[in-house]
Length: 103
Image (cartoon, rainbow, N blue to C red; front, side, top):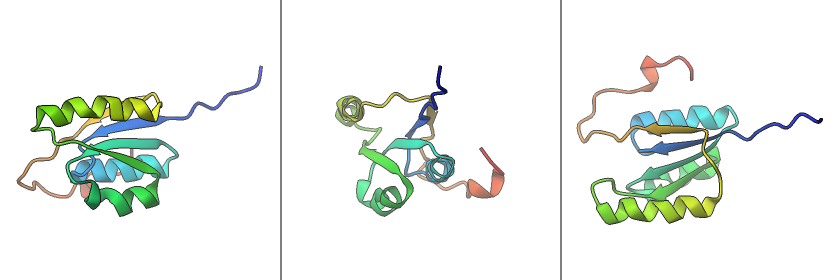
């Protein structure tokens, strides 16, 4: 039987947060397909285009927005191996990258 390399997928709820941004970058660098949610897709466009990352618009404070991510994610037809919840706070607490060495 031939070895089958399984594609690794990560879903990040809160892609636009500093933590989500940094994790998306690191997972992408390590060959993961990264999908995540963000309130402002325009902010993420350049980052997503250059890092093999897909973003789904979602404002976690809006119930309708939360409900809408289900079909959007489903339409991508990829299972996720890792789910990360990192909704950002409105008040910054510091840069994430300076406190992490690796995933």
